Image 1 (cartoon, rainbow, N blue to C red):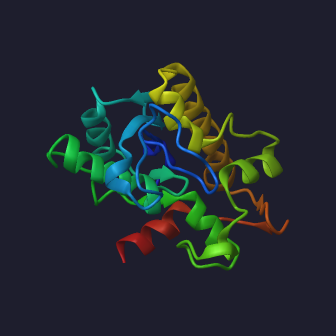
Image 2: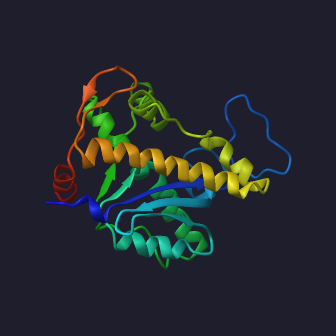
Amino acid sequence: MTEFGNSLIYDIEIAKAILGRGEERIDGIQYCDGWHDHAGMGISVIGAYDYAEARYRVFCADNIVEFLELCDARAPLVSFNGISFDDKVINAYAETAIHGSVAMPREPFRYDLLAEIWRAAGLDPTFGGNSHTGYGLDATCEVNFGIRKSGNGAHAPIAWQQGRVGEVIDYCLNDIRITKRLFDHAVVLGEPIVLAKTGASVRLRTLDQVERTYLG
């Protein structure tokens, strides 16, 4: 039986901005080439909550190797869309910034809350266009707990590049806080959640169920 007490929740903020549809470039701001340019995004902050030590953590360029080593010692690694996004950015960053000396470990299994919400909604656990929209962290936590994200992740790279470092770290840690609230409620306690898009009440898979799938 998998215990949640060794879990690690994590979330990243990217360093390069992404130009939205209809937006104009801001002078002095660096941009990557879109949401699929994982290698060009960079990382400003990684926020985490470590259940084993019951504390929040912050990782930046100076201690990102410590984060990767921590991932190797924890399981499950818990995220909201981490498999499809965060992990890809982290591995691309590790390859270029620290020359691939350390990367996201493969063995500790992942519990991706967004993928599990999609699965519970009867959808494929990987993104499939418009059918998969409406299940985001902000909407899910608002309908279930009355709490929301403190900003827009797409704006975080601009704030970071403009020197508003504390603002970005604060935003990232709030994302960790509300992700933890969702994980504790739906997975640790096994309580049902309401799907923000449909209003249906569902239960997410247990850690044991996901681990068995992950290990094949």
